[in-house]
Length: 527
Ligand SMILES: NC(=O)c1ccc[n+]([C@@H]2O[C@H](COP(=O)([O-])OP(=O)(O)OC[C@H]3O[C@@H](n4cnc5c(N)ncnc54)[C@H](O)[C@@H]3O)[C@@H](O)[C@H]2O)c1
Ligand SMILES: O=C(O)CC[C@@H](O)C(=O)O
Image (cartoon, rainbow, N blue to C red):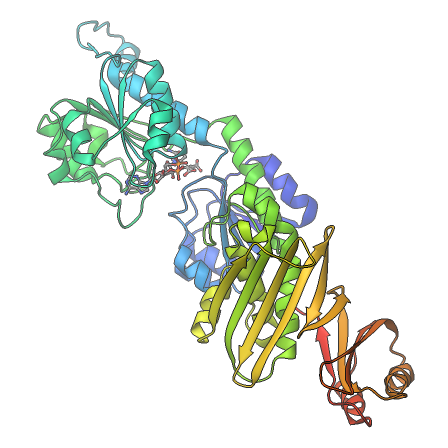
């Protein structure tokens, strides 16, 4: 497969990708060049410079994954990617320390006028009186967004003997208590903070969070550090708040428009110190995010679930480790169920019994949908678009759980209901190996791989032989066979694992044999 790396990503990450696939590194493509080149690629790896817009994504005929070497994914149109079934992954952990330390560097530099004093000395001056600073000790720091970086900054601020107030609507009181800080409402932070630092993503909700109205509520003389995302602060309003003397200074690493144009008014203010989006720019961070994103892209291209996918339900690593061995099983059960079904699909129920019922199984249900929908649709259905595709076709999806099981420690069953009836397939793992153990109420032991021929028939001598002979004539090898008696008197069903494909003509001949009610060939490996 072909991968395009369109921003500067550490060589180590590129090398990991190269060991498995063909990789082109092309920096500084214009939007039109990117649109023209993207159709040939299966994966795109970016940092923050490349804009993966809807136009780029719509032109990307073969793209399966976009990897972001870093945290923020605001340069990628996630909605467009999701609609197209393209997985978007990021590398959220690798640059946390770098961004945290940069925030501290900016806060200290802001408090002590380090950049201004540096510039003055480089100009040959000795202006000791001009650069009087303030201490951080004893001051109140408002942290807005208490995720990875916000937490890192809060911990370090405590070491500087600051009082830390944090606002994050998605964080528990316990977490704040464990850190030794206080959760507060935004207005309390605006009223009390001497320093304020932002560590939240840019979303429609957070755009221009700091605006004219909010600056008006702030404690006079506040100093603001912005190492999160351009756009969370209304830059024009920040300029006005500085000019009005509300904000004593700002340290800004990220901007509404990057690269920053020389005429940006923030650059003209002496009490605004700036860096060109350097938060993640350490050797360690760039190595970390490049290696992480490369691993994620390779997993995505192998159709394996990825913990850092941002357009799939978030699955913690611990849960992922528990459910990972079941992905193949549920997908193949979904495929078998849809082969068995006739008529319009109305609903799909996935039931988890035993220990597996205790973990978050959303992703397994999505994998089941993928298995059901892929054999029947032209479009490729994957972990990203499976729920949307099911919804758009009016298929209801239900998950059920129970801790009790009879014969197996874990049992997952998939029931597919159509307007012509319903079918149920159940499976489990024998060690790490997926096994289907029940089909429509009949106990079987089927390894879901390759081709499975299912033939319901009259329980009379000679029928199994007739099927065997017909397959033999067509040089189709039978690898294993199971015959199960159905509840209906005198009826049985045979399951044959066959080595090669059976053409329609031969299937019709099997169906036409005396005493046979049907013949279905399930291809577990299709698509
Ligand atoms: N300057 C840089 O180079 C650089 C480097 C890394 C990360 N970043 C940016 O820093 C920010 C934080 O990164 P992170 O890794 O800590 O992310 P994170 O996801 O760990 O934390 C973000 C936090 O923001 C909180 N949040 C979301 N909406 C909020 C709202 N409306 N109000 C308050 N809190 C809200 C979330 O609950 C979460 O705890 C991101 O915007 C990221 O893109 C910048
Ligand atoms: O790629 C970069 O240097 C910026 C990364 C940073 O802003 C992020 O969101 O991870």
